[in-house]
Amino acid sequence: MDPSPPVNPDPRRSLPPVDQLGREVAGKDPQLPKWAVKEGSKRALAEFRAALAGKAITRPAGTETPDAAEATSDRLLESATHYATRLAARHPRPVVNATGVVLHTNLGRAPLAEGAAQAAAEAAARYSDLELDLATGQRGNRLASLSEKLCLLSGAPAAHACNNNAAALLLVLDTLARGREVIVSRGELVEIGGSFRVPDIMERSGVRLVEVGTTNRTHPEDYENAIGPDTALLLKVHRSNFKQIGFVSEVDLPTLSAIGRERGLRVVEDLGSGSLLDLTERGFPADSYAPARLGMGADLVCFSGDKLLGGPQAGILLGAESEIEAVRRNPLARALRLDKMSLAALEWTLEAMLDHRAESEIPVVGRLLESAQSLEARAHALAEGLGRRVGSRVQIAVARDRTEVGGGSLPGFELETWVVQLVAEGGAERLAATLRRGAVPVLARIRDGAVLLDLRTLDEGDCARVQEAVAAALV
Ligand SMILES: *Cc1c(COP(=O)(O)O)cnc(C)c1O
Image 1: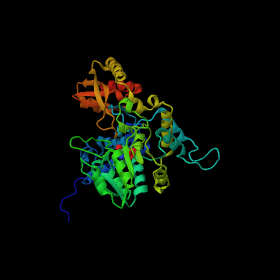
Image 2: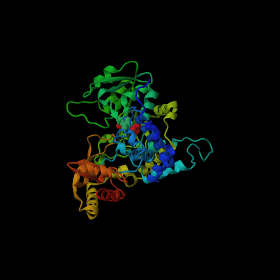
Image 3: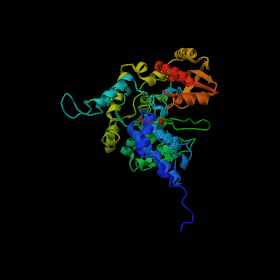
Image 4: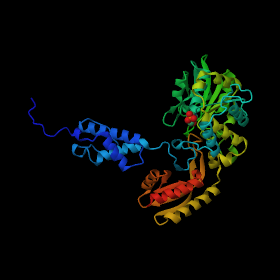
């Protein structure tokens, strides 16, 4: 028998029903959609019920364990509203990139040209001749016209495009080396972004990875000694997001290609980021120009569509006809194919390059090539605009600076840029966080107690948005 007399009734019974809580949430924020209100209320009630039952639960940071007395109070409403708001939040939301990093992976890499975005929207919303030959009425090839443009721009004998560059690498390895050995330098087993690791992709494609050299040094003999009867190809992976300095040596592409030719092996390069425009005369490194890689002896080169190229997410493969044809016939090519919206956007982007409209119309190209003088002038204009609106509440200065290209492109290569510096009362961290959480989120750099707004990634529309955002942040 239980000796202690019953004290309180079960506090869980004092929780309101879902519908009642939902009405309160909707009353607090009428903008929230019904489905989110209902689900948010359910989650909040489940959480409070679990807490009242004394179970360990996970709760959003900042909310403490509710106790029985408060269970039906504001905090339940607050929690339900919090969940509903999070569920209903639009994603992805447009943001203003004031970091100066033109290819920012967390911010969606390359923004599309307006025309490319329109082409994608049209392909999405209407029927098209995606796989129909209008002249004959027969089935058409969805990639034929795209491949032709890729070949025209690059001079490559053949081309293929798929979902993204990771898929392109997977396709190539699966097509040309499945069940066999692929030799790669230990200095090139890179990780890109959070989850893409070259050795993992290689393993998944069913090839045996043969690592040669050491982290900092790989020599031609390392490849030569590793070649055996089971070797399918030699792989070179671009160190897209880091640079090695000091006691280092790598085997460059022409040398590796010579080894491949001598031993009858294909050489494949994962360039990561590549342009189809030769930007070397404008001061960009030689490895930014993808077509030149074939000239250096690679049989196949692959790179992303949404890095330096300035197009949509895609993986682009350039190379010899026989290898590309084998890739096309691989059943995996169907699983990894490019979707119609990206295809339309990519075709538009390539056409702009063929028409010599790249610098004026493709945002990545335009932003990378904008001159320091132009950035300086626009920085002064932005500073003046800000001064008129919030000059009394923040210190504003214009300064010369340097920025990286980003997005797994050209590590160690910096561009000259101009920034507007803001020094605010509450500190740079606080101002930057307020800007990030604003109605139109603005992402900025912080340095030496100042928030930096970098003109390299701000077009005129963005500059207007930045002024609004800073004014709103400083009220
Ligand atoms: C970025 C990158 C990839 C991945 O490309 P996605 O288009 O993101 O799939 C693969 N390899 C290298 C070297 C890269 O830089």
